[in-house]
Image 1 (tube, rainbow, N blue to C red):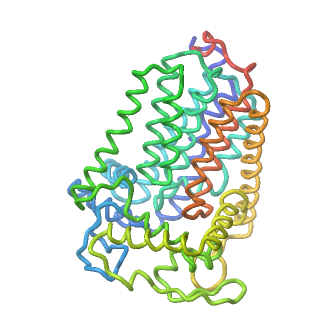
Image 2: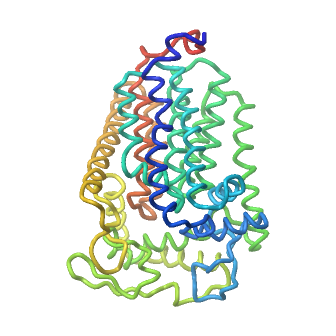
Length: 458
């Protein structure tokens, strides 16, 4: 019934309204940053702007702006340095709201807020929420880093923060069968989980292992029919086939990922990277001749962007991935020490990383109150993550092995790639928010709070 009290339950309204409330600080951040600068989406950094321009003008996925290896021909185009979904979204929104970065950023935030609200509404229809769980959700979602990265256009986390919340909710329906006994909704959530995991991969390839775990979870679910599983497989094969076809058509080679992966792997698998991480941004390996560490040591760098030319982006990818593999083979002790640092930053560090963007000078400045709020939120998010791990361990010992093992696999899949490559705080924030929503939905909604089928349709 329209006026049923459950429909207007304050906790439910507060949770569904959460992403829309967050639009206020996000809009203010956008107006203060890209709005004040007056930039357009063709100037988007991190190698995205060139793709957005070409998509906007003629629909082709390529970037003919300066190649990452800048010593090469200035007219050289690249076709796979970035995964396609984020540039496609920006170009599409640019057609609707104009090409100013502020307008596109606001449209992007509005779109993802609607998507998050849809998944939160689904969750609230199947379980009664206490204000404690709603307060936890707000505390996770309104962290300064979450708002900052969620409002950004410059890198993938501007989409990943919200999409990973939606993925967490969809996956919980598969992890926790008691949440709903409606088969059609279970199928819908299974397909939604697969589609969201695919979207994450086609935004950032570090989500590849997450996609594998989500697909395995769907295929191993005994409550889903083989027809549903076949649809899930088609949903995976179709975009991968299109991406492989794009890469083969532009390079004559078969590739599933992006061509920037080799350089990124080298950043996290090199002696210079080991020396700089996590103090100095690893971009300095490619555009600087030296960097001074906090203890005064000077690390000699090689300004790699200007040192070598490549025939195409895949030769560049192979060269740096080969250097990374060689370093692992020749210096296994240093490589494991590097992994230890990456795990510390990924799992425990509360300070902002990297500490410094530049090769020289002081740490990246933040106003004192903002810096304090960032540390407090990171400490809180780390505690929430450790609480999730504790719930998983208790589940393993308490007879709920299936849910706990799959939860561990799902959460671990998000973190594992960053132990191989490297992680900074912006990479970790979406994972912490996702883990918090897994904890909320999978472990803090006890069986006794579930609505009856009749109630859930109210």
